[in-house]
Amino acid sequence: MNKDIIDLSSLIGDKQYSHYITDLKEVPENIKFNLDNHLKIILDKLYPDAIFRDGYISDLAGYFDENPNAFERGWIITKYQFVFNLKKPEIGIINYPIKIDMDEYGQIINCNWPRKWFGKVNDFADRSEIENKAIKWAERNTLNSTDFDVDLKYNEKKNTMAWVFKFPAEKPGISRSYQMLEIDWDNNKIIEEYTIYTSISH
Image 1: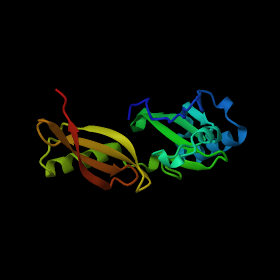
Image 2: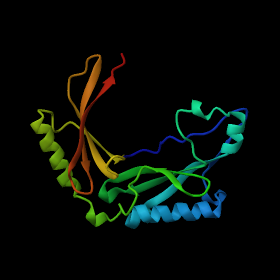
Image 3: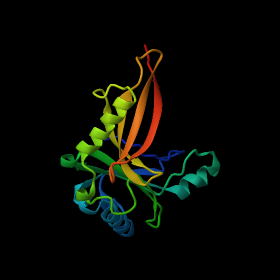
């Protein structure tokens, strides 16, 4: 993944209820303590390679006092949102944005990285072996094994990081289909196979 963009949700009503931050000095000490220790636990040896990018601190009480119909929101917004850019090019991580949502007590509500110790670099399956498996899979499925994109993704169901391979399946018409393959970075096993469709604008 080579992205700087990941969604952050701000609260806006009659006034702005979310404060945008680029410095953790603006965060209470107990929140920083829990945030830092969570990162150490989940990233292990990769911890030094995660750099804070930005985040939001939201006034939930003020917002819902003005907008009491919480059921109308399509998602849960948390008191704190933080994004850290994880960069480790030598193992294939060009720029992976880790997003952590926390409540006012420092509890982790959401995170797009496995929950414990998924940072022991020597335990990761070799990237070349993963790519070879994806190429053989494409050949078995009569796809062009030389034409694909690859990205790093958190698979929430398996609580693991997966390399996602995207192979064009058909010649483009009104829409284009892609055969998707997700391979677990921890053990080099296939965990998901599916098709996605994208529209083509003219």
